[in-house]
Length: 399
Image (cartoon, rainbow, N blue to C red; front, side):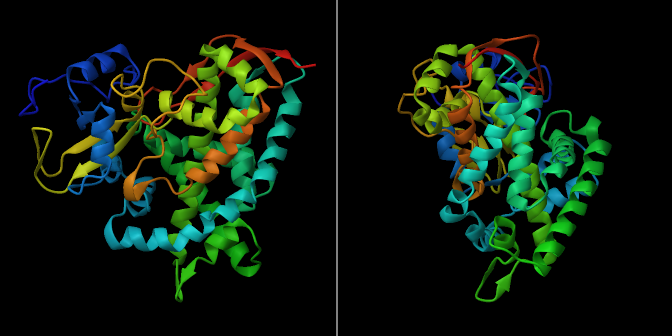
């Protein structure tokens, strides 16, 4: 296909439309026609090689900083968002990442695994004997919340409240951001109250846990400021609960469409880590990764102007037929997916997320045999950050 010289004459995808799925035939048809499409926000990048290249492109910065402005949203969430490590660039981003990296060290993450096992088994014991459940309500939601509460040192009894705050904040990453502005800001205020209490407690009584490591984060005497700590804790809770619960829910939704793969996972739980990667390739909760042009440049024959937003569509890239054969196979060797982003902004908490999801997918298949849908599921819009709201599932009880 010849290079396209301008932004005209290529497909248009209305990513602002909550009824448009980023997994739809419309998107796949656009991918077949062009490596990119026009959108209300800028450009959508649709193919694997282009997403990989642009994640690392030197003329692009992290683009999510503009998301509140794209949606004409102001308030405490937008103010916090502008300060987060997610959207920072240059020396500020490097400094924060360097200071908090010890809290995500392999020995810290590996020390959490046994508790993830305990939490998953406790929740599974509550519903796997009855042959049906709302998977989100009875497993994915409480599991993600309790995992985060354990990491942050909050009592398990607080998990429901923290879950609701995180879910409300998570509405900011969908296309209904503006209509939920007040709800999102209220949840952000509530989450700050938790952050303040956590910082106070860990400074007066530090331990050997993840939160104490974060509060103690320093290098050559340099430490996170109190405001940086608060902002970082909000990011951890917000991202750690909301994206994890959504991704676990999307894993179950994917396996409902591929029950043979679920049965295989029940027989071979050692495939759970690969199953996490395969799910994130075909059904990522983060449906796009955002970049912004910091200067005019040309890519693949297209002139991209400074300030242009690029949404790099994770599922479109992860199912690009030029790279991946069709199908869902937890035994296959694949090229890497982009569910955790890439480049300098690669997700800080990816090892924790991979670990807690791997635990869930290693335990549940052996206890939930012959899974099938048990009613109508409900979902967040299939763009921005997405996932099930409710997911009724029936299964045979293991004996």
